[in-house]
Amino acid sequence: MKIERLDIDGYEEVLRVEDPDLRLLAFIAVHSTRLGPAAGGMRMRPYADERAALHDVLRLSRGMTYKNAAADLPLGGGKAVVVGDPAHDKSPAMLAALGRAIATLDGRYWTAEDMGMSPEDMAVMAAETPYVAGLASGQFASGDPSPITARGVFNAIGVTARRALARTDLSGLTIAVQGLGHVGEHLCRQLADAGCGLIVADTDAGRADRVARGCGGQVVAPDEIVAQGADVFAPCAVGGILNERSIPTLKVGAVAGGANNQLETLDDGDRLHAHGILYAPDYIVNGGGIINVATEILRVEDREPYVTRHLKSLEATLERVLETAKQEDVSPARVADRTVEAILAEKRPA
Image 1 (cartoon, rainbow, N blue to C red):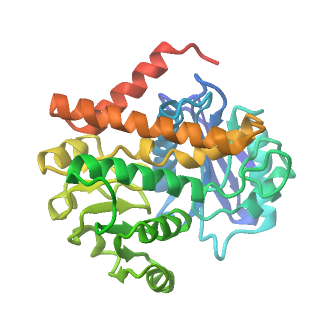
Image 2 (cartoon, rainbow, N blue to C red; image 1 turned 180 degrees about the horizontal axis):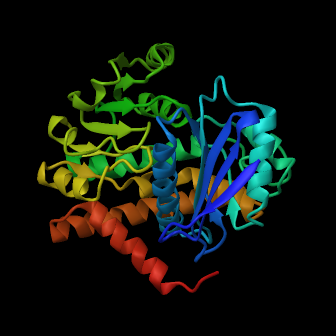
């Protein structure tokens, strides 16, 4: 296995990890350890090329710095991405090699499961390094963070709907959910239980049909979900979905979802604001998963109260961001970044 350190401005460490015999190509990015060890999940996707994977890990790791700061966690931001199809290319040997690569960072980065990864995969890596969370068993095991992420997204949709649609509850609202992986599926169940109508889409047609049957939703093609008429659009798939091409097609009052890096650029937050669409900043909305993982990293004895307390804090942060954005007549994305950057500037490095 070859590990190469890349010198990238604004990042503390970036590793390129390769082992052709294992069909392994991955990147591990540590954006910041100012607030504590960098923490962020590992995802596996069939990226178009190496450049796309590197671009993704850089954006995601920076996003984790902001997410952890917004959630008031003593953790910095990091991320790992693996190039390949998790259904066909992943192997125990590859996972073990990834664990050894993480071990070279000596605790500056903690990983956990993300898209294309599972608690069982984390257990394989944990045999090679202690800096793995999201495990299914053990004294402080936090398991799959997806249900907690979905819980936070559900709460954020409630906050956003109150402000954008003047609704005190979600019953009767139509939510368009893009992406029905672990987070998206859990979110759909919660929304259905709350009386919402659902329009859903996923690149896996069988999964979309199954979730729609279970939640009473309508399935549309993946390339049609953005333009559906709904009250709220909930992106729960890949990033960059909100851009100068897609935003003019939106027919919703608000956007609040579980995907990371939903805005292709910060200017797209301004575009949403100009179109009268209230945007709930993604790294505040989807912070539940890392809160859950943090209980394992920080060895929290009583996990549920810790998670509940931090989720309520995230709701309060979202309320403040949306209120300030309203008062200043600017995009909530601008206010959120400004808020987090003030936190990072005020706190001493861990």
